[in-house]
Length: 210
Image 1 (cartoon, one colour):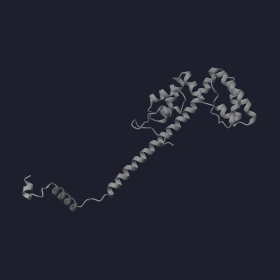
Image 2 (cartoon, rainbow, N blue to C red; image 1 turned 90 degrees about the vertical axis):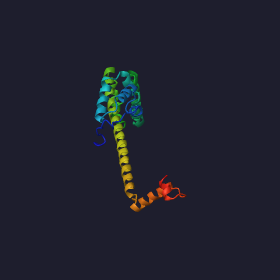
Image 3 (tube, rainbow, N blue to C red; image 1 turned 135 degrees about the horizontal axis):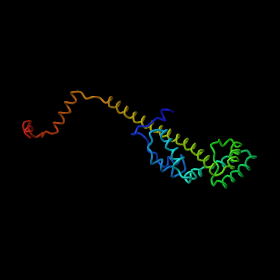
Image 4 (cartoon, one colour; image 1 turned 180 degrees about the vertical axis):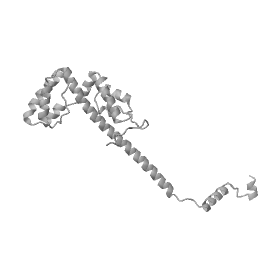
């Protein structure tokens, strides 16, 4: 893992693209500024910039855009035992009506009872408290996805470097395997090249004077 999450030199740092960053957060403001700031020298550099951007330089609208990508209550309902489905539906609707965005959490979707308790407790928050909680939860997802993106780019770069080295080695081996020409062959080749320049209807002396 440490080798994958290595620091990049200025020459091989990656310029992150919009489609790659969109995987990390569904916010055009966040994506645009991350792309402008890239390339980053390391995962730590990218994460540090993302954290500062997310918490200190992003408008609430940017947060809401990112929040809108989540469907955690629906997923939880799909996995919940029958006796919890009604409560999850009601509390999910209550949360959405109060705060204007869907409930989401870093809690594993398989833990239906924990999610039910969490959404119930968070419904009691005021909007400022809940925005603070939700933004911190969202950044956990951003950080995880940024790490996965960096790992993938590192693996692709490593594969490219390995392929390049393989091609160089193969070319070197092929050069070594090519038979070298003997002095007789070289001489013969030279003679044949000269003969092509000769006018065979003239004497050697006449050819020399051409």
